[in-house]
Image (cartoon, rainbow, N blue to C red; front, side, top):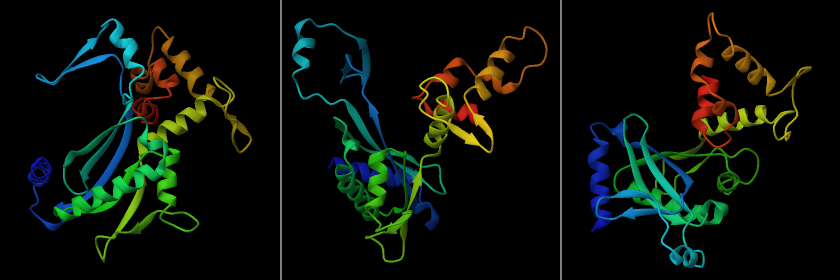
Length: 236
């Protein structure tokens, strides 16, 4: 009954008026769950940090989930954004063999309720890359045949904000910070100083014009390795 209600709500929110409204992208990502938060099932809210004595000690011995694996359905030619499914895990994306069956089951269910899945979208993590490579023998694998349709293929798309974050992190760690990169462009060495030094000089000016980029940027945009949104701002 719950699955039927989910499909009915998906079709209702999709607002299918023309055939192109059926085309969707299946996106997924895994997020770490913040610890020591209490969920109120009656109000659906999180009630902050807690300390419940020895219960915290006992919790460490339980098989408690640490991540949430989420599927999103997004319309290609519509404003559809639908949280399709989520799984509490201990790191399912650590193994591409776990990703494979649930992705294709999601495709099958979406196709059965009238949606046309034409692309997958996820970040460039190693398990996702391995998942893509499982659909080809060699070379660059960017698409595969949709087993639930004779005339449609499914294309593989890497999430752009995560690509920007990876680029920003490579710049940040080139000859600086973690010193894990040594990037070159022609003769000049690309280092974090191409961004950090101009930024710090600009924000230190007490008067005069300041670039709009540096008005909205902060030190977090330069040093945060976890948030794709900061990387998007730096490349805007």
